[in-house]
Length: 179
Image (cartoon, rainbow, N blue to C red; front, side, top):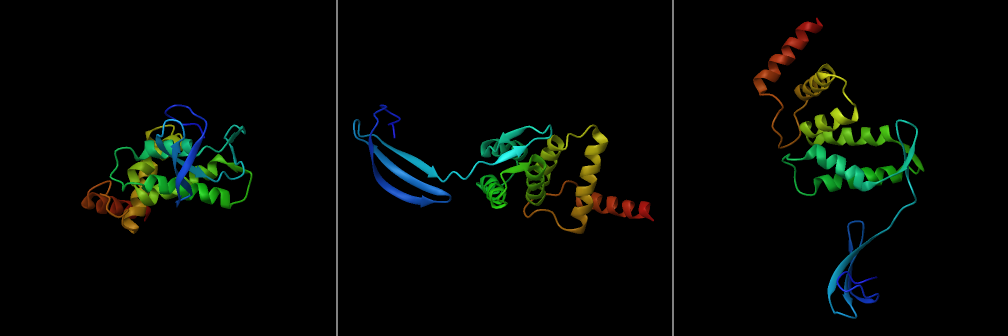
């Protein structure tokens, strides 16, 4: 391990601790005596994502994390919830035991979890993932989300997309139009 401060090629481990998905090591450079921390994570067998155009690309956890972070940007979500969501998806993908996973499977996993977590983040992610062609397709997705919200309450601690009175009116009008 090279020292990040002086570049010396040898250091000693002062402390090791298990963390969520790996090992945290506190190290000290044998040349400049600077201390630094490293994290070691078991790297599972390679997993490839089959893209829409049939290309294969190695699974990139950071790419998944970045996409979900963009969807959740400026949303009132608890600290660490996005990292946990990505950890859960990654664990489930490796648990499937397949070397290649269609990108649609990963997208659906993200959509399912975001729908339960935060409706705005879900709509943001869906608008990119599903590549809505026009405003009508987006409206249909929001309407589907609203009708599901009327049947069940929204995610804990999240304000509804529309005021309760307006949601109730929409639900009544949809029931009338069905009959």
